[in-house]
Length: 549
Image (tube, rainbow, N blue to C red):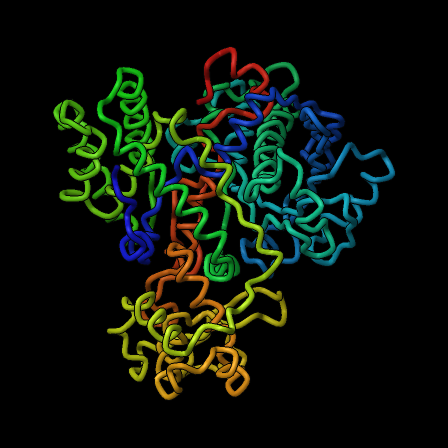
């Protein structure tokens, strides 16, 4: 048996900020289910004018029920186009609808979906989303197709998408259906499956929209976007601080995600030999990643350097691959080779590559990547103060060297914006609002709780302590969770001056299946989803063609 990588390695921000999608990522799980069950997609309506404005409904037939993407495309002046969550207007807006909407329902949604947060919704709406065009590229593609030509492939794949979402809301936000409404449905029970289905459908709408605009410009001579380019393109996404605290606020779910991935890695590393199918699958995945990395561009200096280091690492891996796979425990030898010689970016890419050809061994772990957090986390009040303090010292030993008296270690604070009701990051010594701080300073609070417990009688119960000091309830609850679920905690200071929230964002987005990470600052980044993956309208035939593993 190969031991799982310990959380003190896996859960550091530097490594989280180098995460890569794997075959356990949520969009890959969705694709496999849709392919296996042969989901069918049809355009129930596609009512766009010559400029591509109007409405469309894409119906998805699963074995148990029908879901529909209801899409609206509206005019938007350039001065109003923004990726920021505080924007008030968008090129396109969407609802994932439970069932097939009739004309009255489409009209209701058309009056509300383009308003997004300001609209009114019912439990029939499962996901709410909006997106903007990549204006220059979208127009260049439409113009080329209208002239009967394919767009420039290098430019197209360098961006990777024609449209970029700025929010994909689920789980009861703004009056849409609560998670409980769909949690028992097998096709949507996994993490973020409804959101991934929405984005997958948005991809098809985007590609159909650009074809439609080109055809309307030149009905007799327009070309359709070539199948290989359609498959290569995904959906862009701009993600910021609002999503950063998710991994902190959902410790059980976070633990389940990382435990599944690390269990998968340990299983593969323990395999005694590399079969021909697995060798071939690895080589194909390596070649695909090399192509993606060659097109992966970012203006962020740190990411650009990391991407170049990754390209070098993959070249070294290709040169040594045959020798490594000839060794005993070949996948373990390959991982250790990467661990010894590669950048962190290269090491985490290797994790994804190692998992790729082993679906039969690890795919069932996808079913474990969820957690029922509705019961809450009852505090074990009978535990003694001495036991709790020792638990803290063990679980948070990594935090012992952080001196929170130093201003740099205590530089930031997390709060919730009154305007958008989303998390934001404040500068403690420069801005007001620290009195509204959210309990996300996990390392600081754990150390302070341990210090408070040192002043108590060791044999006293935690219940007695909390009756006197109720302000420590959140830290006590978290300490007891982390002791049981080791991947539940990020092993770094989340309020330090050197914090880069994009590291947390990338870790979560990699579990979604995101690629082409492009930090635009230390607080938000752009990514692409579904690029290079099957189109949803093709999954009914993909099994027979052997396209999806």
